[in-house]
Length: 216
Image (cartoon, rainbow, N blue to C red; front, side, top):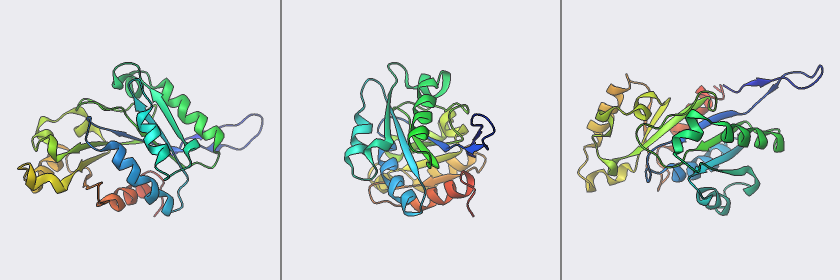
């Protein structure tokens, strides 16, 4: 799903990086998912960069820069300064500019992960910003989240149900939650993860390789 851009003069079209959004409520595990995806993507030879969004800080970006998982220069921070919806949906200019700048500095980048600031079930990404986006919820938030049919749950290209290891401790019937999520999404992809242990990450990378990077 990477876009093509034309260089100056008679230069051949240059493929730009695919842009993958990661949204979801506060505490659902978005940053933890990014931290698991980075080494998994790199291990498959995929050239990546990361953009994080926070309200008025660069805390998530600094966490990823300090992790040692990726060159810190490949991590950019966007401060929304207002409702997190705004910079990923209504006016994604800041994120588009941040992604464009990463592509200029790292011409070989194939995929850019864009983590949204913590939001609610109404969070969605503009298609002007992302080629593919996933929405992260967690079992500790309640097994009724899929039944609430929020736009993030319904419209995302991939729904991730995280912290599955907590299900027995918070009284969640994980199988029922999974089936209800599939039902409200008309059986579009739903993946279960435990980012603390790295469970379910390979399945997400498989999906990104197949549906976003078009690798068999």
